[in-house]
Length: 374
Ligand SMILES: *Cc1c(COP(=O)(O)O)cnc(C)c1O
Picture 1 (cartoon, rainbow, N blue to C red):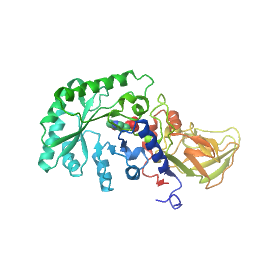
Picture 2 (cartoon, rainbow, N blue to C red):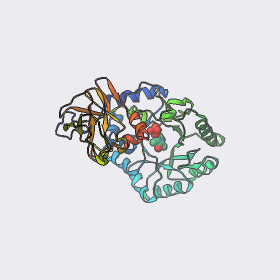
Picture 3 (cartoon, rainbow, N blue to C red):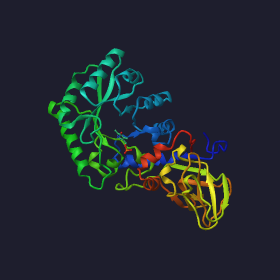
Picture 4 (cartoon, rainbow, N blue to C red):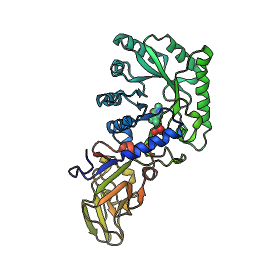
């Protein structure tokens, strides 16, 4: 899709592919040249699964991480050939499909591992698996104090190749990294299994974006960044120490301009009202596109390089913004996320105002919003 395509609806997400390239290069250097598994789950954090993966494959990224079988299949159908690890727990019925498409599976328990082994035997394929150890996240994975049972079982599986062993941090974005360090310690302790048996250790990985930024000793054999690839910080306590560039711009255009007399309410619930005549514009984007309704009366957009407050409740398909001393014409650009004439609104700002995290803002931008790549 070309950025010049003005036949698209005016509300668009633009993804700056050069920013993605830049971020990958910076992060790879920060990880001392270790292999990078680019995490592209949830539509590549809203940036577009296939386009982002194709771009990163062309940049030479080492592998991809997704949450679901379906995301992995979409990538294979799009011609992505690099290894793809499916992080999530996999129902047994999905295993043959995963194996047929050469996707790597997560084995979070002995029972799941044995199911994978059986599915591989039945399909005549070798399964590539990553053993998952729960070191303190409490999500999926064998408990660290029982990890030996899973590692041991993997040695008995005849149709399984262990491509990696991994864990996931619960608090790597915190100012206090004590818990993250404890998780890393537990992980490394579990991995002494291989040393004790005189066996080669499979690829070890635990570093998400926050750990990649804040905890170099966790980089191990491979890093698994998600949100930082897109130039967004993992959390308010985890500042971007690298000059990463946000790749996503969300913009729309003014479709309606009006002047309301003093005391004229705006929007559902009449939740906004001015005691002076007010110039307002209507913007064709709403919570039906994933622009959070929680931003009603509390976020700003950029029009003519100025910050303009949202007036009233966000509707499903539209919202209103007050121009204050500024002016605007139909067709003028409205920036929801991104920069305009040197003024910028970051996803992190919207997340804070909406009482959520940047991940949720990004992944909520839905399929109704066309993506353009430049
Ligand atoms: C989502 C996810 C990541 C990436 O997380 P970020 O915080 O976006 O870097 C890494 N590993 C696993 C297992 C994940 O589920």
